Length: 392
Image 1: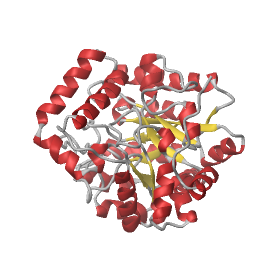
Image 2 (image 1 turned 180 degrees about the horizontal axis):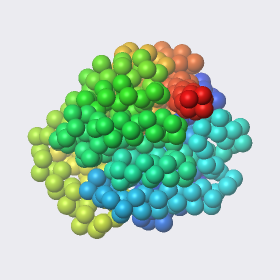
Image 3 (image 1 turned 60 degrees about the vertical axis):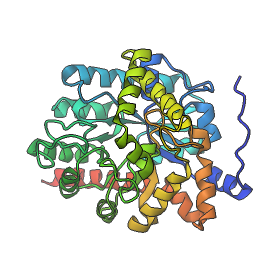
């Protein structure tokens, strides 16, 4: 039986606003736990960040489970693993029909909320998993994938990544075909992880709005994974949204500088996690987080608090406008700041935004309303392309 956590120390106004808002988190890596560990979402866990009790505590109404594997895994092996991970999420949804429901559209999320279910949506984090085959992309769509991140950490043979050497000066011709097919299928185009040049190519190519499912602001933390102010503005001008990532290395300039100055710590962390976990990537991610927190406690790395998330939200809204910012936590896939260890802590963001003077309407937009509007924009673009195809 689940034991509820003590209520967060937030105002009644924040708690009520959070409860009546539709809260959407566009990126978690909990899929890895389902796939590698036979992890169950039904019970409250003491590790990691996501399970049904903690989603309920945090008032999360819709959550995107990302399928992921390193860019070093390619070819048919990557395709097969992606399909198995998608199956693992569908299986877990089926185990909890009174709590979870599979969703694809904004309307599905609204229905889930009305029926007191948590909407679970699917994403593929890395275009290398489609193995340069549009038929695989179509199969992803058939299995319920709602967005695809074009690259992960490595450049693919059709798109440049932000953290790897460029090969295409952005998108290749085939990469443009991928974008066109994603638009036709209604798969949302995610530019988190792509290079700046690739971002510009995607923005020019896509007939639908595009978004960043889990990226923060480069002006505040100079990671190539974050978006520049110009990118945030351009994204918004085309109807997109930037979903703020909670990873400490994308939030804090000081943390990133300390990591860069001590590369031996990252190497030691990776080696220790691999020694403990072997090839279990889900275990490696969680163990890495434990090691980083230990290094913070030892004074080797600076502490990063959850309030940095709000600082990035605030900056992005100043650049893009309040209609173009949301939340993409990266739970179970990154190092969370102190105070935002898991999904149960999400109402803290509502409290902080109220304290900063945001209106209740604007907070509702940031918590999920903007993402729902964005999804409707992608759905409308798909319908327009379908109608156009029928008349040609």
